Length: 211
Ligand SMILES: Nc1ncnc2c1ncn2[C@@H]1O[C@H](COP(=O)(O)OP(=O)(O)OP(=O)(O)O)[C@@H](O)[C@H]1O
Ligand SMILES: Cc1cn([C@H]2C[C@H](O)[C@@H](COP(=O)(O)O)O2)c(=O)[nH]c1=O
Image 1 (cartoon, helix red, strand yellow):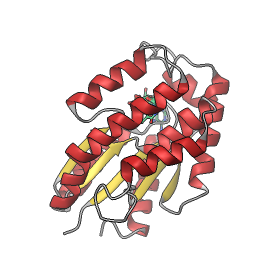
Image 2: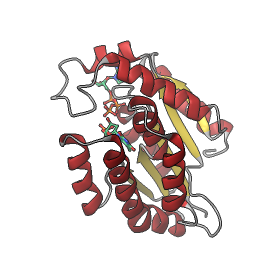
Image 3: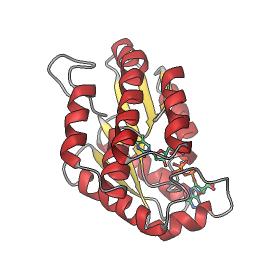
């Protein structure tokens, strides 16, 4: 069986993480081995870089280089081997987050991000192919609603403590990226948890990723 790379994306508080357990259970019920992972992170080195990116002040180029360095280690150590084994990789954020947060949120140069994307992902799992998720579940939610959901929920990190306007730009960054590829399945994350899950199931059925 061939591997399946699925990513979950959306602004902070959009509700991605609330559905990862159920996604894992769903694929396991279909007889698949599942690797659950996240970005930045997923390896010891990448988790160390994550704590720097989430906690230390830095400029947007440094931030972009660190998330791509973490991604390279993650891809080489975890994602590519899992896909080669035929596993399902459930990844909480991948490169679309860089285009949305560093590109949209920080206003960093999208051409530089595209160059780094090629350096890190080209040929990483399959020769002459840019590694990308087969499907990206994009949890789309207005920044105001996400902020309400997160209010008081946890101590905010460097991103979560950004103003609403930052998350509006991140959301626009996701929308722009989604407009460029049909691997995105837009999920209206403003609905109830059950309704959101039903949309996830429909997206997977439509793409014939589950029976
Ligand atoms: N459909 C929903 N309706 C109302 N609240 C929700 C819904 N889905 C999730 N929540 C709540 O919103 C908050 C954020 O959800 P969750 O942690 O899943 O978001 P996330 O996208 O993973 O955020 P982050 O990327 O910042 O970790 C949580 O308190 C969760 O219980
Ligand atoms: C992959 C990636 C992530 N980020 C940001 C987005 C979030 O605010 C944090 C990760 O926190 P989460 O609770 O695990 O979602 O990191 C980023 O700015 N750029 C990226 O490439």
